[in-house]
Length: 190
Image (cartoon, rainbow, N blue to C red; front, side, top):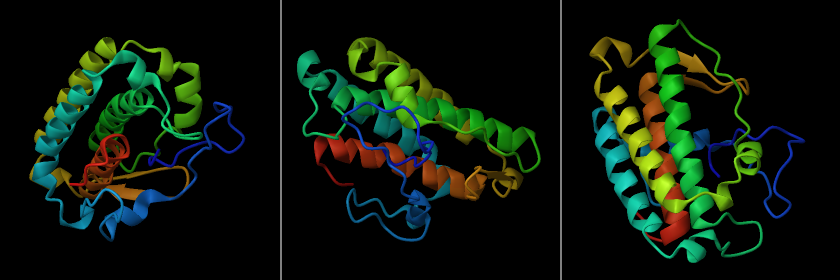
């Protein structure tokens, strides 16, 4: 769960340990796990990367429904839970991108990713429905990145934990999350 926005003390699934790491380091160096070299990602390529990643998730979600719900180890989300998270990351980052483009230096509302997983019952959702929602969310976000004008890539936005992004760094930070989670599920590095 690499979005690193869990709220301390939040209600979490008994088997999942909230991820409290600061993942902004991926803006400075390649990820040793998934292999994505985020600093080399070209901002104009993010839209295509979002679409390609969504295709990978659709292939995962086409698998065995019960297998998708099975957690591979204690404290690790199932493939379905990861897919729900990625869908919601695409939705959240679309909202945040809109804020960055429409407002000067906005502060993003907090998001408790672990609390959302519990409240939305990620592990009980229908994989076919999740696939459709993930595909739509990915396309919406990809199209939003394609509409970013050259002069807008340096606009800024902030998380409450002090992380500050330009639209460009935000795009590179975003793409690591779904790529890394697809690696978490498939074991395939980029």
